[in-house]
Length: 375
Ligand SMILES: [Zn+2]
Image (cartoon, rainbow, N blue to C red):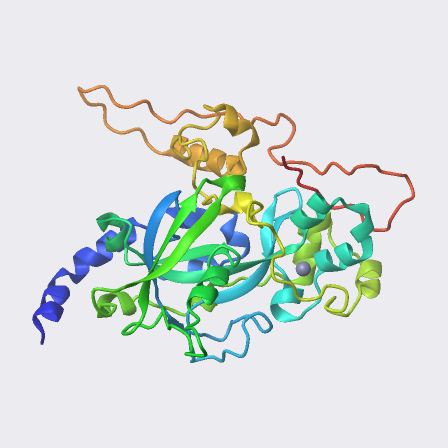
């Protein structure tokens, strides 16, 4: 038994406890529509990538049986891979939850892609861009941003393909046909350094480079790796239809729903988006992050930015949970202000309601979906 392993064995319970402490952000309602949070191993949470410089390792995993059929390439169950590559419709329906696009991810019919293919002309470029599926990646990362992050071990990172994989692909290529740099390799890989500038719509990811690691990825980190694809939640056509149109699909619509995948009208595309227009801007905000710099769940409606905050609903829900917790025992020192209950800011409904541009009486068979307007 090596010294290291001996020590590790003794400290394992501490490591596991610290791990479990880091899971607080698993409760997001929004991620819940593309990930089955119950399938995430105990102790693993989502990594937040705040503005600033970062150094991470990408940790490979063994593919389970749930890898995307189309965007996942030819990876089979049991093979090693370093990412899950998928396409996501970002803000679907009144709840504005993300859904994995069945067409681009798995080659199956998608009600949103069908709608866009039939109604492209009725949307502005911005509206169309907000509705169409965006390419996303899931990684297992080990962050070296600070010792606290390092102690958390493996975390899940969900990020636009455009921001990371797109850049890593380029710098991983050795010149003159010299193959590629396997940056995710546990023994011969590299650390990835990059800078995130700004947040929300102004996010930029810059200066990606590989740095030498001090040594191989330790066993106790590798052993936290798990089948990352196992957490993916592929919603059915009916579920996405209901979320998108705000009503259940009826028999007539089911019968007339196109059976193709939509590939013919929606050719595969890498994000053709200028650097100053990140493809999925607001989504870069972590689901339990306060974009105004306040404390998520506590400072609800304390800032001007709360009015337009994409995380308002989750913040409110968290606030309600906090309010429901038993009060701590009174102490002599004055306690920090307890969380304040806040009324829903929308009087009639806590959810955003669709605002169709025009609603002629005898129009399309299907109602128009909720649109998200920005800017
Ligand atoms: Zn789709």
